[in-house]
Length: 411
Ligand SMILES: *Cc1c(COP(=O)(O)O)cnc(C)c1O
Ligand SMILES: [Zn+2]
Image (cartoon, rainbow, N blue to C red):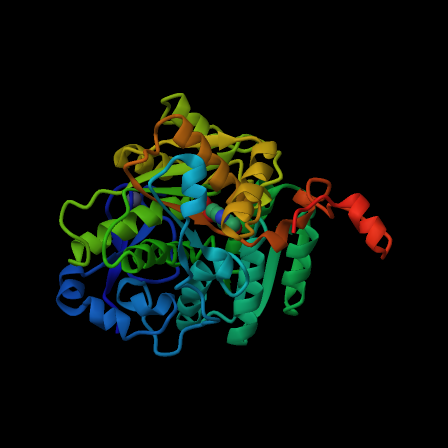
């Protein structure tokens, strides 16, 4: 059983049944899943959670669908790694990396897709679809295969090779669109009304999909021994993840799993080549102006972010900030994390780490805070970004002389 009471419009508050709805008929505001928090509070305990699977489904009571057999490849419960070496380089006291590279298809998108397709299957959909910047494509194709659903995935034609191969291998349909993500998304919005029997996870099923991101907050709190961090740095594409990480911490307070008054500051990370939300924050504006993306952080390259305004509001309310970093800083961020902690992140992770560096230098992220940085995707997906930046320290003939001549490393 689940504790869902229905869907509620984030703008006008009108309520709807928990069906495949995503916008309010009345004001076109986005819908959000609503729960009976009192019933959850009476039911959920750290022990009941600990008795669950080592996946996002241990938090099923706080998810929009609660099934014995979800669409599941094992997403979630990824390592929360104490990052003392990186903390020392940055002058921080307590720093943790939430390592979502460890998810089944190598990114945080497995969380949202596992939830979305479980709900889609429950609603009777047989076809899984999405508009993707890459990682969502991987996750939808893989989870659809697991669920025995057909999949049709739409991507911008110029995605990284690894993301194309690791989507196509699952055998669904993969459509490369000659345009950027915003063009792909527009096409999928049109297709959603033309093909009402397809579950577009981030369009008509988006309300449920988005809830999957809350599990990041749930896991961080549980892995800290049911305690809240002071500050979380979150990469921003559509802004959904950031908004739901905030909601996740608030829900834990509401159901009694975090102390009353727990406050988590949330800061957003973007690449300067696509930073509409960071720009609005810097300008003190309420209006997120769409941009034309141009950055190596392709998984974050959404020029017209659906939840941009909500992410902006969430960051302001939490007392956090935004940073935007250049592509060179992104590469530095990837290398810094790899060198200090042995974690290889994709370009989005480079955006998070480089933004953390910037926020520390601005005094926004402080040495007295317990800080968590979300590393949301695996570096093997975006190898192209590092070609020409890292490689062998020497290429030699197979002789001792050649080695001694080329490499000066003390024994
Ligand atoms: C999609 C994605 C994000 C951001 O997700 P939004 O919810 O759209 O803001 C962050 N990191 C990676 C690796 C992603 O693929
Ligand atoms: Zn409304």
